[in-house]
Length: 246
Image 1 (cartoon, rainbow, N blue to C red):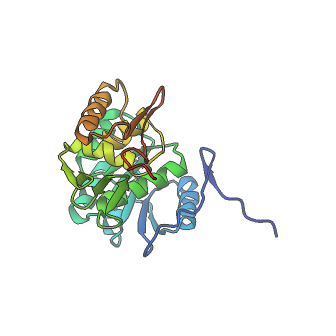
Image 2 (image 1 turned 120 degrees about the vertical axis):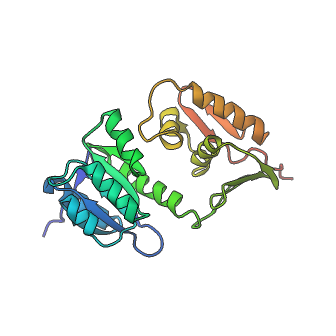
């Protein structure tokens, strides 16, 4: 019997995500079966426990979940109203997944309690990454310390230190540094950093990013720790500030 084909979104295979620890409970709120069925199957393959509902009323009445993927175009209730109701009764991560790409829709959803906003069509790998990133922020006690050479970030307390020296950062500087520190050595494009540290759909001039990078470099005071990948973006250099070996 031939193997069943793995569904894709925008050409990205639904590969296992294998989240660590107990299964994360995910509520999928989507009335379009053509989208919901393969998406639910992919999320289950990725290791999530997935319940699906197709109306706003059912979403509000559903059992508690860790993550809620919420479509705004529901047949019975306004999606933003559903988001607001869910936020009042739950601390779950709420990620809006919708075809509505207008800035006003994004701002409205975030203002009533959404944690993130993904526009259809989307890459499934990106959706998984956004789920993981939002869960890390919502549950900072898991894997609380990130290290890169002498740099240590406590994601539970948001404390940053260099070789034991406390470093005072603004909220935006911390978010920028955390983005780079999640995968030292990886080059993050300017757009990726803006989306992670500023807004999930940030665009336009990136002068603010350069200003914050310059400030971070001054405060961290380790030459080469934040390295520029010219024409692309930035990365944390894992070997910067290490004592040379004999």
